[in-house]
Length: 340
Ligand code: NAD
Ligand code: ISE
View 1 (spheres, protein in one colour):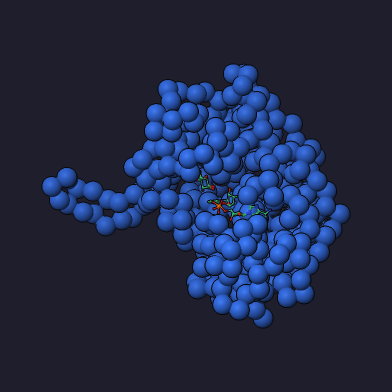
View 2 (cartoon, rainbow, N blue to C red):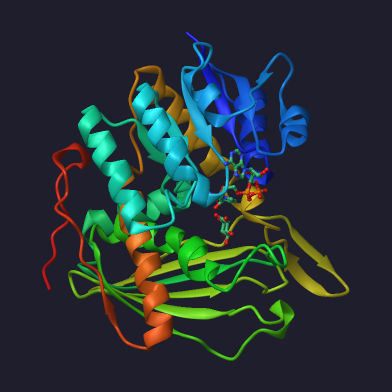
């Protein structure tokens, strides 16, 4: 059976996901699109897809079995709640939502529905290198993880659209989520330090250095630099009791010329995580076809939202800002141990 999908938001990643859903993956078809910019939706619509005037009309259409949300973060809450009300599986790009209160409303709606419907776009969990790294940590031969060093560098971000809060409440969510997943731990508190500014970003607060204090006592340091110029560079290294496990350098052709011996660095997230996005959708299509969702959940989106909120408090206060989570509903599995 072919899963009939409607896409909300046809900007950069919306178009990329439409490409993979129509040209790369099987068992799925994009039958509907919507964007507040109707002309953009019409241009992005694959042949035969209907352009809907509103997200609600698309979500409630009988033609649509499942929904992919690629609109701006502040629009996600209403679209998620409408999908849950319609009982339709939904893939939602990160961030899940933009406030703790909104995340709690989505959790309440999904819990009242009774089964999982939401998968959040934390694609690093589907990346083969991150999966191998987790396997090593889980294998236990290196002992307990003590520290995780996470480097998140973007070549550039859209000037004017990407604001000073966004390294902390938009970009950091990936590092928060992958830290929770790799270490199987929750973030208990957050600190932020702001080094010398990168003048390439003009007035943007960039870079930032974030410390995530995990419940077990492990510490994660995150470098976020969003105007690093040379490429999209994502690194990760876990220091454990008996050794260290790190993401490998990406395989790339080795070029030797008058500048030396060089390997290309991905230009942006589309290139670096191309296979991970494909895999997250493969798994989503299977679950959505069964009327449910697996993978990163509303709970994971909520946890990452709390980290973003705490990071914004921490950058203002200069202090260590604690995180308090609600009790984890049974729908989302067992709670991570919080040893300290
Ligand atoms: P974009 O600005 O290129 O596209 C967003 C689109 O959504 C625009 O076309 C806009 O008109 C439309 N839109 C906004 N509000 C809407 C609404 N209420 N209803 C319908 N359409 C609406 O942005 P983007 O880079 O494509 O990012 C979209 C989302 O994907 C964001 O949440 C972003 O954080 C996320 N994202 C995730 C990754 C990743 O690596 N997982 C990468 C890039 C973007
Ligand atoms: C973007 O929205 C993403 O999600 C990318 O993965 C991230 O690296 C980038 O910083 C965000 O702006």
